[in-house]
Length: 134
Image: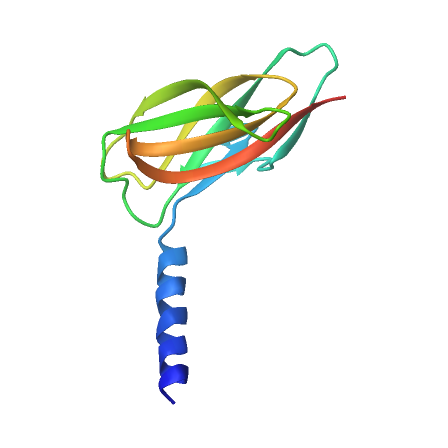
């Protein structure tokens, strides 16, 4: 009986934690009116002659950010699957916001990892995506 109760409590804690997480989406465009992410995906195809592509990095949370500055750290994933730091982009936000988006230009084709921080040491969320060259 103790195992069942412990399992139920553990599931409830996990659900509460998963429910409060911030998500990171990669969008080709963000509709500012209804804050809709257009074409949310992790794989994008660029034209053969394209050397750069712009994506919108959209954060959605169930809680307020609690900060006035977000830091997006961009990493390339090399052929050995290692993260190589490329650059970072800062964004001024309102501490009561629950959603934000930031346009970023990437070199193509490549695999990337984006890590979003509340301050230099507090990671909010991370997610990877890839640009293919057709």
